Length: 260
Image (cartoon, rainbow, N blue to C red):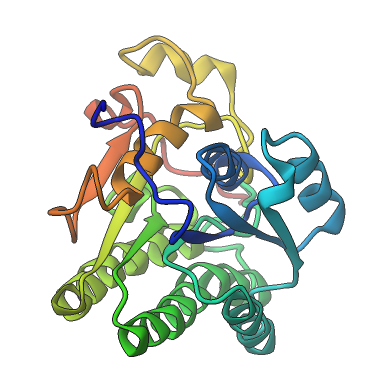
């Protein structure tokens, strides 16, 4: 049997993907059900979740969940929903509020700052910890994947976004170090300019990308599955995998224009 033919065990594996209504989260959630993994599609829009499930190859394996992960009670509700499935072995945190170029350091307001950190960092931590505790109690292995950004280490003119992603990058390392002894792996996927989700892509950026095109959400899904799979990546934890067409070899952002 081919090593790549059965990356997951549908009889044992279940997944939870946040931000599954659009963009990269949607592509990964759809890829997971395509591999036979029962998957919670979590998003704050019922319309987006239903559309993502309907467009998946195995909609009968998808479980919809709707809530705002900027709220701690929503995170608790999502953990309860995951527990009702019998526990989650694979967690993908892709949810992130949309970002606007106007929200630079001198303009971003407190609400926007808070929501970006609450969804990316706070929710990511509390969901991962809650799921990990359940796996540890059940003595089951797990695999977690956080969607960070190239701008975890490179300024983006959006300090609320870059600092949230930088925090997530360190959170991956902290969790990987703590949870490894319990056979729970934690890694990061680092997208480049992906025309999906909260990023409104400018086609002119393609000239800065060695592979010559903007990325699409579907470009992330194969790598996500490979890293999530305990069969394919069982000795990998605390790592960050860049999927950017080579964009990280350059930095195209200029300082923002400030009003006089």
